[in-house]
Image (cartoon, rainbow, N blue to C red):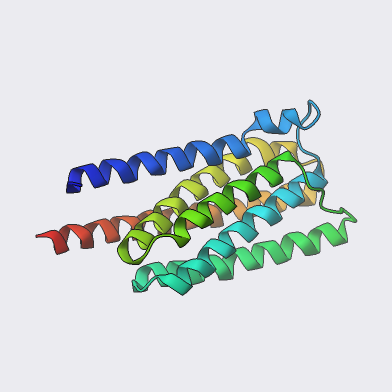
Length: 193
């Protein structure tokens, strides 16, 4: 496949991943959960699930990637998402909120299983590009869901505040992922010359 064809294919895969994540986190699914927005218990489970998914993607990246930028990014995802997940679990306990599985958290898990299988089948630069492309799409979807579904739906003020506080962290992750993505693309262009 030509370099241009490969780039088009990667961009198309990234777009598909973005659409899938956005659909999995979209308000329409929340409404399918009984005609209303997610409850605080469901929000807690969605956040836990999203963090867990990204931690698992990062662990896979640490086991397969050799590019230092990708490995550093993956380690940051483990560190940051573990901290967010821990704080959400502690907040839920403090508020006596028991996380509740829901269609959105289940859809996220199913999508993550498919994505993980695809990533496991890749090696070297192909894996690193696919992992980082997925991280860009995933963080775009998470940021959108936090802004448009989770924050507006949160009933508890402390939970809403925690979600608002995590938003800049996720935006920072997106910027970092985009930076790594650009660096990898730049390295690939240099290598092909």
